[in-house]
Image (cartoon, rainbow, N blue to C red; front, side, top):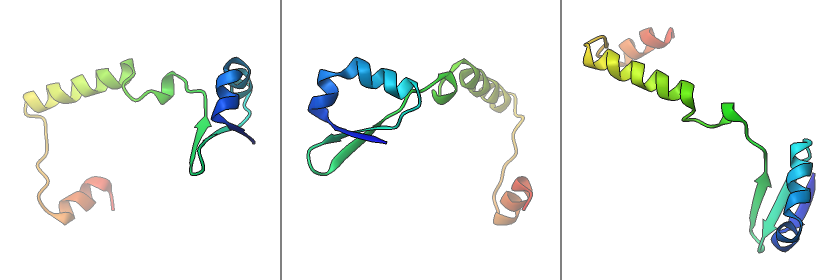
Length: 83
C-alpha cells in the first residue's frame, strides 16, 4: 500500500491512476484526518448500470400488474427470506 499526500497526487495523477490500474493500493491523505482510497471501478461496480435499470423497470411492471406480496408480520418476513 502506498500513502501519498493530496499535493503529490495532484502533481502525478496519471502515474497514480496507472499504478491503481495495476492493482496497487493507493491512499491519498488530505490534511490530518482525511484519507481516500484510489480504486478503479468497472461496469459491475456501478449500481445503475443497464442491467440494474432493466431489473428496476421489470419490478415496476410487476407492481403495476399486481404481482406483489404484502408482508405485514415478522413471521411472513422470515418465510419470505427462508429463515
